Image (tube, rainbow, N blue to C red; front, side):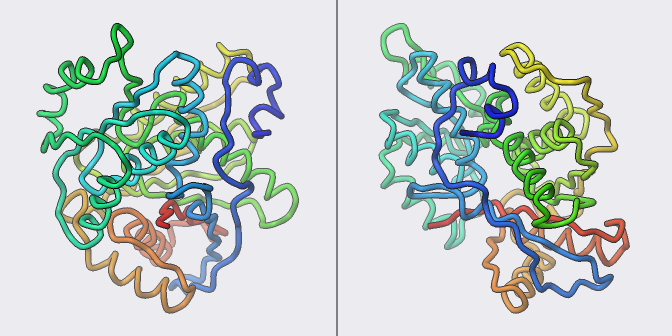
Length: 331
């Protein structure tokens, strides 16, 4: 049973959950040697997921798939880049639970990683529409909704990354899980948790969940996407929308102080844009591989690790310990 249901029993009947992986995900110290000596731990979300793909997207699908079923939808329509982890996870887990998936894909730099991902997407059974740009995707949306409707029933539409108010529950749950791991002394309370931000749902869910759990941990979001508007006010609004959803569905929450100091966005690791590798990311990949045996990918996780190392060099992590959230779940 998810921690949200354990802590707030009224949600068991109003916010259904579908278990798609084993919890809790591993939390361990990693032997990186950053310049200022900050203690770095990894919460390995890449280990999550019992299907053909893993990682942070599957956490969101645990809440989104049963919500789609509750609404009587059998097709999911969503958007992403050409190498979208989110789109692939949706197609694979959706197919396993009786859903068809349609994807609208926008352009990004094509390398071996993206080519391999596109092949996986083609093999997933999803219907793929190449819409090329965010603007063209928005203009195509009425046609896509009509094209994938079943009679008068429209598809279940999800924004990029599944970052809807229901999707954010995946990382509210992870924050509660981290709090439980701190409570059982797996690690001390972290000063920061660092994650890549592609659509914002992971960071916004963490802010809400950590506040609910009473942890003082600050969320550091490393912006890796220049195709969406991602800023602190917008992410805090998203967290508040999910807070309102929880209250509306019966959770008796205390007064929550979702203030801007709970969240720091880092923008200097983006490089040339979404999907473009950076030199600092390559260096972080190599260091993580050599010192900790971690395999990072260039779009999200390498840039997040590069931010950890840079923030540590600048003394911006308040001495730690910090948690690096590993979000990639390649299989």
